[in-house]
Length: 252
Ligand code: SF4
Ligand code: SF4
Image (cartoon, rainbow, N blue to C red; front, side, top):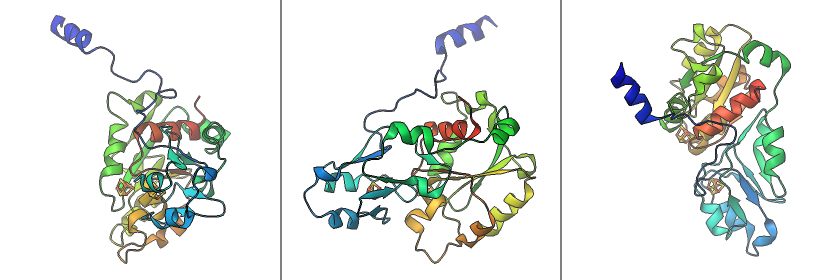
């Protein structure tokens, strides 16, 4: 017992105290800020450098539902598109992920994820989620696994992953949805009792990401699945996922 107490004292308290205020290193690529005036070259060249066609023009905008945060556009535009280390990159609707010039992080981080009273009432104290990797590369899946580790400790908010959709209140899916995984995703979704929530995590899940044009994916199953929360990234950082879910649940 004494050894155990010594060990705990030695390790100290390892969980991040305030998940809401935790900051990442400056080098982390998070919310993009766009200042068109900063770049005098041809913006079409910037759009063309994007491997996932996430940049649209007039006005310049980055679609966080497609972006894989490679940083190429930041280099080509000489910083006119600049990735900050801000972690809130989620939205309750697909359009909310399109960030154009003039978008302000302070406003975005407060307004993009909408919480509803009934969701707060039902799941605010306990939310069990089933994770389905619909052909993800394991990057998103690893970060979701990290959400429950001793540092991020998502379980302290009553949010956990379960081993069966029958025990879950909602589904978190990753990956571009391959032909093989499409029926499994739909089965898992249908196995969860209503009311249920659906969270799409990562560029692949939201738009197909790098695999959007592959003949091996089948995203038509998503016509039957209503997505409640979109969490961007490739992969999203645990702080991005946890903050998104807390905002969605209306937990301050
Ligand atoms: S950082 Fe995103 S928007 Fe920029 S080039 Fe890479 S994928 Fe495209
Ligand atoms: S979004 Fe990126 S990290 Fe996530 S499954 Fe796709 S390629 Fe992997």
